[in-house]
Image (cartoon, rainbow, N blue to C red; front, side):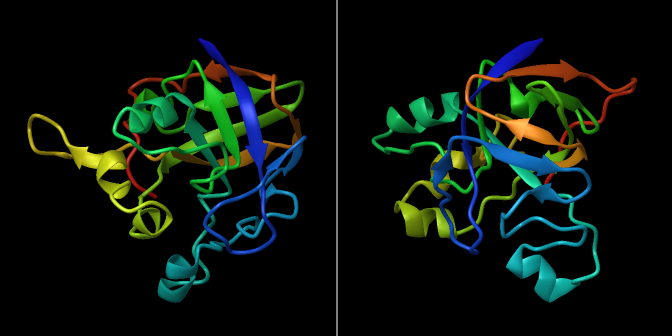
Length: 180
């Protein structure tokens, strides 16, 4: 199973959207070099307020580009980096992968999936009504989060658009992704 990186983004400021870049450098155990969310401990503002010593399980945010087409059919226009992701992919069912999946990106970089992004009201601040497009309920009434996945960097390296993303599943039994 594999996909492709279509865009990379980073921002040194705590801004909702992140500008796209020609490349980003992943640093083992930290995240994206120069990104506001890089670090061993949590950097997301609401999580820092709860407990600044908790480990950073949200070092790298990935979103599947196919989501942009889905929300586009509902009248929204979203481009890479605008939802705050660091890596935009194509051809991978990121949301269907289990916790602990390794994504080997390009020549060197490896990230390990830790969970789902928990979308917040800032998404509606970006485009009113978009939150309902990325959070919903399934037929059984369970909450479904579709705003990407979070990961930690296991092996650093440079990531560029066009890089291949190879999936390495963890040993079974698999645990589905949940919010982190």
